[in-house]
Image (cartoon, rainbow, N blue to C red; front, side):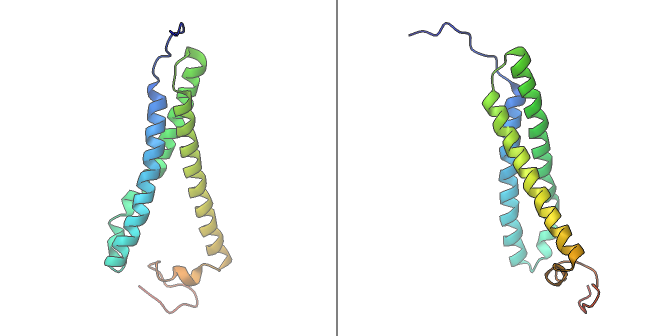
Length: 135
């Protein structure tokens, strides 16, 4: 009926990893919808105000990864609790940065290959070769 084992100590980095990993995804998703909503309402000019918001999720994911590894080290060496929280934070952080890296590589590939220049011409404030659109 009663547990004879001791309860593992709490692990602050594990909680930090979980919270920042999930918060990074929340900010990423909200930023995506806000970009679409504000961009549509202001013909794209309003999205410039939201540009700093796009830098927050990768920072949160990096914090989740670093604190997740710190938490797993504490679990291994000090017997602290929070292993599942640390792993969840690590998965959220690595998944977020992985998707962001994949999207960045896709955009670079489209720019280098020339495939993406047509649809990007409306979003870039430069004159593209063979394109008469200038901002």
